[in-house]
Amino acid sequence: SQTIHQWPATLVQPVGSPLSLECTVEGTSNPNLYWYRQAAGRGLQLLFYSVGIGQISSEVPQNLSASRPQDRQFILSSKKLLLSDSGFYLCAWGGYGYTFGSGTRLTVV
Amino acid sequence: AQSVAQPEDQVNVAEGNPLTVKCTYSVSGNPYLFWYVQYPNRGLQFLLKYITGDNLVKGSYGFEAEFNKSQTSFHLKKPSALVSDSALYFCAVRDPNTGTASKLTFGTGTRLQVTL
Image (cartoon, rainbow over all chains, first blue to last red; front, side, top):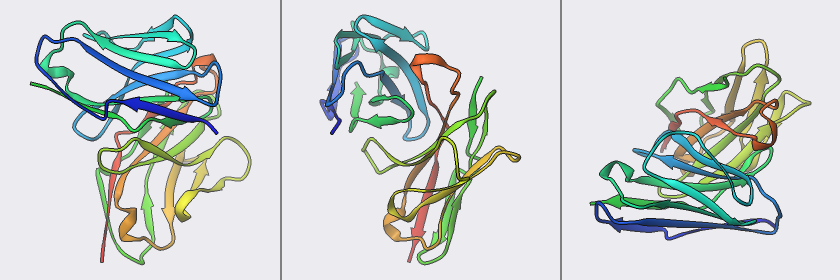
């Protein structure tokens, strides 16, 4: 069966520090992968999606970037975090519908 | 562009009563529709989907949803609510014409509160 792993679960980082969140998928090949951010426990904002290795599409301009170095690995990064980057980050893979990871709570202080 | 509206920020219902969480959508073609549930500090869990076929879709944990094309709605229902159903519920739509990326557009979520 397919599973998706996301880590870390929580992260507290100072303003200006770098960020790396990792997401990996098992049990499937060439998945579509997505990064979402959920602010204030409500709406989901699509940040990036990828349909294959090295293929990244950005949905909104921001301080973040994404990379897909391997077929089942999707990484969300920042060189310098801002306070506004705080939120709950969710990775997902899927076709018709999505399977979500358990999320990372990022607090920038 | 596709969009989803969940008009209620919160729905309150007593345990044992039926519940309805509303969702309306806008998409250019025939929609793919989904419901997800989120518990605190967790990822979203899939409840049910409508792709084609019977307008009444049954999903996990006793939930069901009815696709109504004329009203462009996909309301989530359960005949008898449980306190453990209290969570945040998201409706989502996919335009099948969006190609390989299959991006879902989510509503803003409805918080369901079930009380004894």
